[in-house]
Image (cartoon, rainbow, N blue to C red; front, side, top):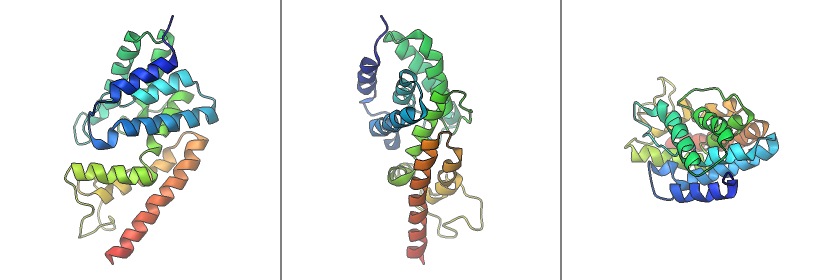
Length: 211
């Protein structure tokens, strides 16, 4: 008999409990993505038996943000997730759809989600890059990579092309402020709008203080 969803969640939590990768992609991040995915799955009528394992295992293989292999991370994670779920006795018929949801969640991979479940997982992950948590994760990761908060000469990229390898604030302009437009679900769009407004308020306050 295939292993049930509740047992799979317990196994995923145990697997991911040991620190791996950067602090912005820890177990806390995974739990938040799972919570987002549960909520969006209810709103969108997506299948929980696909969405939940995909959300738990979407970062089960981590590749550093500054690695040239970063765009391959979601494919590697999908393959590892299938291997794990098969070994744990999860329903074999669901594995291709879980793999696709994991592959398509990544911003770097630039793959279009083909299923409702993949759209939910993609939005659930992107929501964690926005709002108060997303702001904190951006600064944590930038600090870990040795990047300054902003470039003195042009903090808000008014006279240059933004490059998030140079400063944390650049990441707002290369990715974060544009995520709202990439959301695939109605619930994801509503929440992204609210969280993006917080990022804009942060930038406005930073501009005021730097004056």
